[in-house]
Amino acid sequence: MFQRLLLGAVISIIGCLGANADDRYSIHAIHVATLNDLSLARFIEGEDKEKKIDFAVYIWLLRSNERNILFDAGFYKDKWFHDRDISNYVRPDKAVELAGITADQVTDIVISHVHWDHMEGTFLFPNAQLWIQREELEFYAGRGYQLEEQEVDVDEMVQLIRKNAAGMVKLIEGDNVEIIPGLKVYTGGKHTYGSQYLLIENEQNWILTSDNAYLYRNIEDQIPIGVAVDKKRNLAAIKRMIGLAGDQSRVLPGHDMEIRRRFPTSNNITTIVE
Image 1 (cartoon, rainbow, N blue to C red):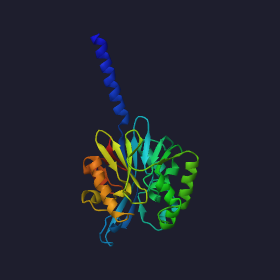
Image 2 (cartoon, one colour):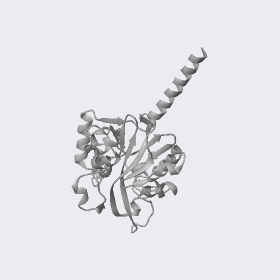
Image 3 (tube, one colour):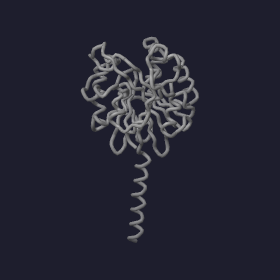
Image 4 (tube, rainbow, N blue to C red):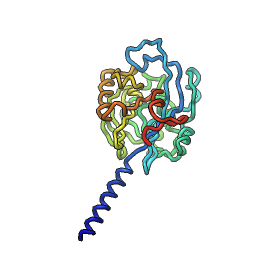
């Protein structure tokens, strides 16, 4: 009798350990481009417009036993290179190969918002289920495009609508939603109308902010971003991110080159969690 109870307890413990292991994600920042000499005032509210910064473009790869997930997917169209100083560019579908997977192995892409440097690359990953806030898609497929033509590409919106019609888009309804086991999205950052950020529930929580907090200065000095629909709500979201992560060191800004210095980096790949 005792042996059967002991065996049952061991099986139960192993099952729990397996479940935890399945939900644990590795986290890698893949550097796909640098946008050079941008005004710091775009990213830090109140900064001198004449100060310049080099701006990293990342796609974030999260891997579990079952899924290869991207948070945002970069860009690839030639037109973005015409009037911007862009260096260190790697096309997103080729960049993931540096991390050991192919484009057709990406299972999901969480789109933080519809700006060109975050959403355009999603269409290079043919098998990926896309996740986006419903209000973000609806706003920028309609009136919002007229307000932000320089950052939202109409052809990309058409492609997104076609993906939705094909059943490849999941529309997320608002704040604090678990979309995949161990991954929750939150709204309120207000970089765009319905921008979202991502909580990864590992052994320790991590937050991927996207443009809702561009730089470590936004987080560590609690300064809102320079480009936001609502800067007061943006600052409130930054404070919330720190609370959700449990420590500001686990809140990862969307575009800071400093990430590549704070975590182990080899070429284009920065390892946050192995």
